[in-house]
Amino acid sequence: KKMTMMDVEQSGAAATSAAAATSASQERAMKQMAAAETLLRIRLLDNHEPVSYKWLSNDVGLSATDAKRALQSFFDAHADQLDAVFCVSGMQAGTFRVRLVQGVDAMQAATAAMTPLAGCHIFSASPSKKAAAPKAEE
Figure (cartoon, rainbow, N blue to C red):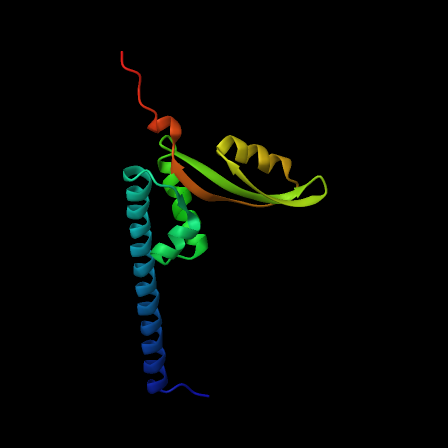
């Protein structure tokens, strides 16, 4: 079929509409990630309350995957003030296992013990007990 000028215009309008939808979707995702950052800062650093990726997903409206990414990013940026629990899954001694482990060292040990490793992600973060401990007076 030979394309007419009307076909070209409709095709261009559809492409413009798709680009606008993609742009709106990206803008919404950026706003959600900014909201996640704010909520994590308030909940973890100001209120000293724990946060799971599922809570973040539900509260901000992020997918579970995006909530894990946001929580991991926040933890990485504030690791000196936070503790984390990680979910590690894979084969260990011939059995598929899913383990929740506390701390980066325990996560690294658990991932090293699983062959093959099926997955590893941050499950929750909480204020560090070490960071919250009062300093001794001199």
